[in-house]
View: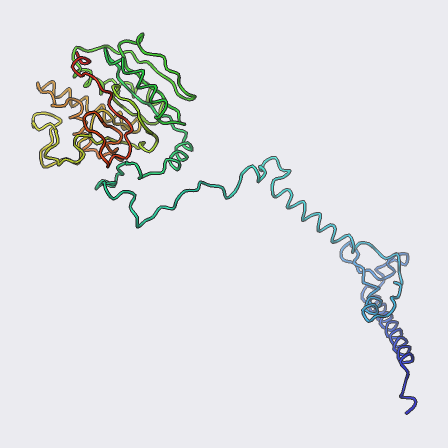
Length: 412
């Protein structure tokens, strides 16, 4: 009974003695097992003294201080490792792995690679902020915004100019603008160019093509960067109607001679106008026409189409979509070339048959756009006469407006 009762100190001493014996026994067994597995693979002079296993050419040390660590966990004084000079090959492995991982990440991100730009030069996640389009909420309820052939009709409130500007800047487009300043019409050129610089295709490259028989009278107007004025000298004509009709031929000819090489889109307008508000890339499309301000609310029977069947411009009373005004049309250079060439050929056929369309080139333009539907239609915002028509509420903006003038005096 007394032998079984031990004091705490004696009990601790007994446990330490037993632990020491067990540790010694395990070390002997491990040494015997290592020797039997490896044979004489380690030289006697090896600093690892049989405690490293061979894996290829690298030594992997077996932890000799595991018993000591276990004793530390039980609160017992640590036992010094038997081999203080053990191999450091194991301790280098984490450092090597860290360095390899760091270099892979470093070069993979392109920090030191000259072929891959640094990520901070391409900011990710940046884009334009604008209101989300609402599918169930129409942009305008008071006007038609889409033709039956799915061409948009451009009104204020139907487009986001910031989005469009960005898209056309990515395309790096150049827009050509043609005007005819023949005889007395050259007096309108200064106001036309000055207002165009304020409102027309701002921020984009523009070529102003001025057809004139009076190049010396063309005013000098300061132009912005990327915008230039090109004078194209052409002969005058006895009648204003001839000037109007001959412009189809001249635009067609110059499309082949230079426009196809110099610009991406071409817009053809009258010179006796001024820009009053923004006219930008929202109008650009392969082929576009402009609703006549006097007929945008009328029926087709009221349109002033050419009604004589003998003319190439003839349109029956039960046909027609809109009435387009000849003072503003355009599109890609190739489409404008086709349009002007077709209208010129039709006018030449009429002349051979001794007939002249009621509204000259405008009548032939309407015939062409009836057969070749425009891909975009401009609302009367883009062609207006406030002196004659006032400013109705449906017109939220007046963008390109007629200059008050005495038509009889100018034309004669």
